[in-house]
Every structure is written in C-alpha cells, then in structure tokens.
Image (cartoon, rainbow, N blue to C red):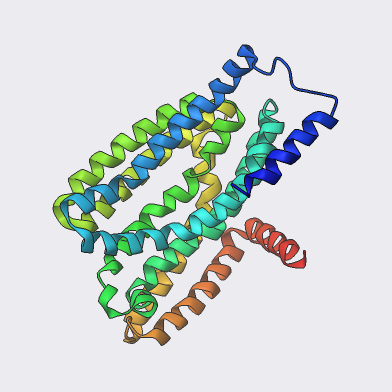
Length: 308
C-alpha cells in the first residue's frame, strides 16, 4: 500500500498542474483498426504457444516426467541459437520493414539480407550441435543425461528449416496480415501435433522426428504464403539460403566423420574441443569458397558490434 501512495500522489498532482486532460479517448474506428492487427496477433500467439508446447504435454502425459526431462534438455539447447539471434534481429526488423511496407522491392531486399545473416549464424551452430552431441551432452550435464543425445541430434536437424522460416512473421506483421498469420499458425500447429502424436509410439526420439517432419513439410508452405505478400518466391528464399546450407552440411560431415576415421573416442571432452575447432575452420573455408559475400557481410556486422 505504501508503494502505491507516491504514485497516486504524483498522478493527482500531474492531473492538477497539467492543463491538458484526455477527452473522448475511446474511438471506435481506432479500436477496430487496432483489433484487425492485434486480434490476429493474439490468436497466433495463443495457438503458437500451445502448438510449441504440445510435445511437452504429450510426453508428460504418455511417457512420464523422466522422458520429459530428457526431451526438454535437448529441445532447449537446440532452440538457444535460433531464439537468441532471431529474437534480437526481430526487434529491429519488424519496425524497419513496416516503415517501407509499400515498397516491396526494398522489403524483399532487406528481408533476404537479414535472413541470410540469421541462416549464416544459426544453421552451422545447429549442425555442429548435432555432430558433436555424443561428447557434448555428457560434457555439459554428465553421463546420466546421455539419453538426450539422439533427441538433440534429431531436433537440431529439425531446427535447420526453422532458421529459414522463423522470420516469416516479420512479413505478415509488417504488411498488416496478422489474420493470415493466425490461420497459418493453426495449420502448422495441427500438422505438428499430429506428427508428434504419431511419433509417441517410438518414445521421445519419435516425438523429435515428428517435430522434424512438421518443420521440413511446413517451411516451404510458410515461405510461399508469406512471400506472396511482397511478391517473393519461396524458391528465391531457399536459393538465398542454399550456400549456407551447403557449407554447413560440409562442415557437419567433417566434424562427424573425422573422429570415426581416426578412431577418436566421440564421448571424450578433448574430442569435442577438436571437433569445434574443425567445425570453425571447415565452415569458414567452405564459406569463403561458396558464400563469400555473406561471410564478408557477417564479418562487417560483427566488427561493428564489437567496435561499438
């Protein structure tokens, strides 16, 4: 109560001192315009929340708390690079794209450029996690968590198309088409729940495969529907990501294959360290060959951020 008294007193004094007082602040037309945007956002966020947590609900209900703990560890680690990088850029990109919403060529250029940076930073991270999982999991959490390894590997491969499609919300929102975003969220959630429910038969790894199926099936659909709002073909978006995908795949093959070829123990901590160095070197080398413009752009961006 004492905390509210200073706030109430300052509010009263401001109301007395300031000459302007709000009047007729309820505008039905403004409310309708606001609801056209925020209603779709509300619906999407509700559906997206339950769709993203359906795997946890299914596993907890049918497979138990122990299985849910293993699955949750793998899922959260997979999601970390995607949410951190996309979330940071998203706070900048939505208002930026909204400011030029009617200039579709400029929207396409800015969107593809930003998506390219996201892909370059997140896709190799996910591939690297999958390739080093056998040693990384016990290194991070101990031998009792080795059951996370196959789940993490499948989820990381499932996360690759999510890196490409997770930013489609920028297009829906910047173009004011949140109702369409809500509809697509419903469709994606239904497909995802069905795939994960079918995967329950094979345990938590089966549920992870359900996430993978949903991600790889729905990503081209999401790119097609959202891209039509700004005349951006899904094939153009996928071609934009192709050099990074190829470089990450080559890096993954090196990181995964070298320990097997030379007979290293994949579960050893020092092996994970060597794999990380191999991954950085091989991805950088491949990017210089097939994705040099994106490599220069990311270097420049990181240089400015570090310099600041």
